[in-house]
Length: 477
Ligand code: ADP
Image 1 (cartoon, rainbow, N blue to C red):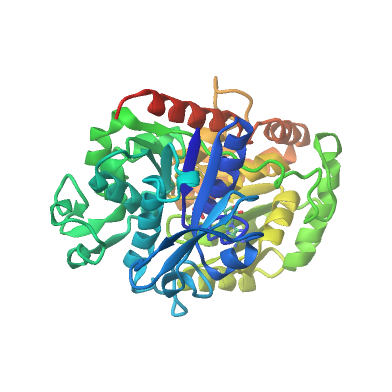
Image 2: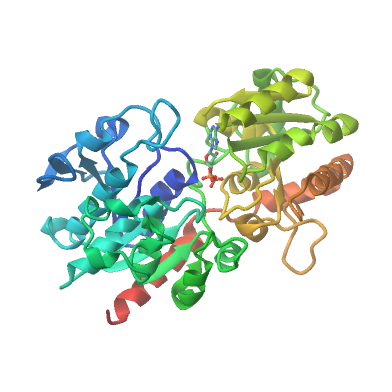
């Protein structure tokens, strides 16, 4: 079975969030099951610089305003769309230096979809896939191009990593996007007077997956469907929620070169050395006995970063510490920096994106807070389980699926704390429950051990994707 995975970011080349992690780790897990996965990504500068080999496998004349080539790094099973007129730009893959979306994002990611469709249709015969697997809106137009191409086509799957990001663009771009006039209809790419890349993907994909079972339910409701819940309800028979895993080799405290002291389940006491290193790195008071919470997050409304800031009084009352690693919206960065300044030694932040530091945070924090208002899957709580930081999560989406609260019956050994609704009061209450648990060392270490024993690898979920692909290939178009 040959899969072409199409995605706008890919660890370790370029990453803004969990999408890049999944785009790297899922194919690796599928390969272990004998499935050949090649990943097509835009040829941003760090992608082109990171290729070990770059064999041109296809030339695309006039790829939306310039010539493009598909370069293959066969060892890594990566294809890069080398279209300098669209992707030779430094920095964030989606945003210009002003922090705003690149004005030609519609065309840039149409080019990605177009290239994927060319490969899907067999223009580079050695890479012709059985299935095109598109991730999120940036890749979704591939499925529209394939649908409008007619003739023999590969089968198609769309994975939604976050329904909030839809790729909405003005209707007048229809022609520039090389979509036929009849594409602008309810059964096509039209969405309330605009063009929606994600909607196009949801419309045309033969199978839709999203990254947790609970999120697969939530997005079918008006409150969390971002206007697409009707379509998702219509397509419920092909919509599947498959929880993400993490790369358990990359995230392995027993071998992790990025942390201060390596450990495993038998030597979990060595986390203390990491805790001290973390306190030092963040400028927190170096007290081993103080409960140290942490968070690693994009700073957006979705992630509940304002609730972290609002937890300062509760944290102060319980004498706990908080270390925050993250970056994003300017006002949230300022708010987190200012509560850190106001609570020197107890609350501290590193504003920025630091992959190495994320590992130390997981290895040194006693508990990891994930207060997301919605969360398709979430990866940091899975890393926390793997590293023995007890997750304290909002009970939404994949957080609800992956963490079992100490008070919950019947779901298995408890691995953390969860709270609902996602309000300041509920978060503060969960933090107070954590402080009580912290006082009961035996109980704390039981919950921690349960987390460390949880399988957060891709192996089970990769099998689910594999059987979804196999079922799809077994059905007629
Ligand atoms: P999302 O994709 O919505 O941002 P996820 O929890 O799915 O959220 O994935 C976030 C990924 O990005 C995790 O691997 C996390 O460790 C990482 N991450 C987020 N912010 C930072 C940061 N400031 N520094 C380092 N890693 C970060």
